[in-house]
Length: 334
Image (tube, rainbow, N blue to C red; front, side, top):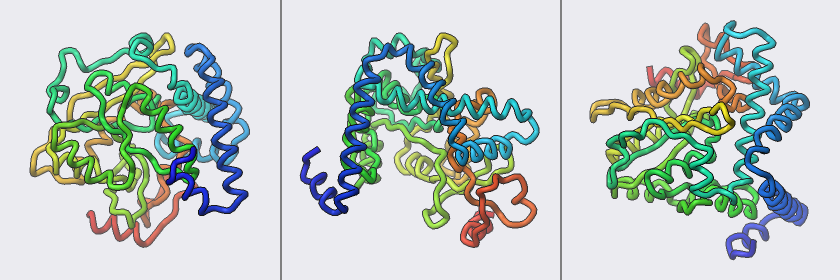
């Protein structure tokens, strides 16, 4: 709590905000301490209860969730089924959050008990020592533990530290996300360090389904066959610049409450493959899992903030808006 960087960051904000930051820090530490007292198998039922409560009372995010589901699947499900999927999605995210707080209890023995791994027997080429690889996933299932599970099989690799507004809680999240010894890479200068790490034969993990603003240089991909979305080009560029293999990873439910972590076949990439084609292929590799288990994705996030003009704007959720810069980007990409 008292590093020079933290002291400087706290000194730059008003007193009331410093007080709020300290209360947030104490609340998170206390919550983690309490959750760590629970057996792991209690977390799932607790998360379902917490998720159900939030789904009931969080009206705005519930509307976002249901609008996203209707935009993605159209008439595939009934109103009651959409409500069920949305409620379960809240429970999945609540479980991910609670299990992150429970991370101080993680050990290799615990992972061996609750995780089944598929796609690594026999070990594929990307698992070889000295072979650079990027393991990518969606905000689906327990995405927070995927890096720790992957490190279990391929050795530790850096996790980029997310810069949070509250400087006190960043170290907490870093400690939970590196419970099994992962290295934490500061966000500042992370791009150059990532390139160097991959060129030296290292491995890394990455999420690929967050929106970017049109001004942030995204690639526009098509999701669920018709919804255009601006996402990061970073995985594709890193693969092209470093020769790293791109490997899709899924976190699926196991009948007894555990997880199945599935490593899918690596994406076929040639020097002629465009950044746009690689980025679309990353999404296409993981979308089938959302059709199989739609409740696993983070539907409460505003995935489709931007929509094109004209007839292609039909079917987008209520919060989506038309922006000139986004339309120019779409036209530029053809």
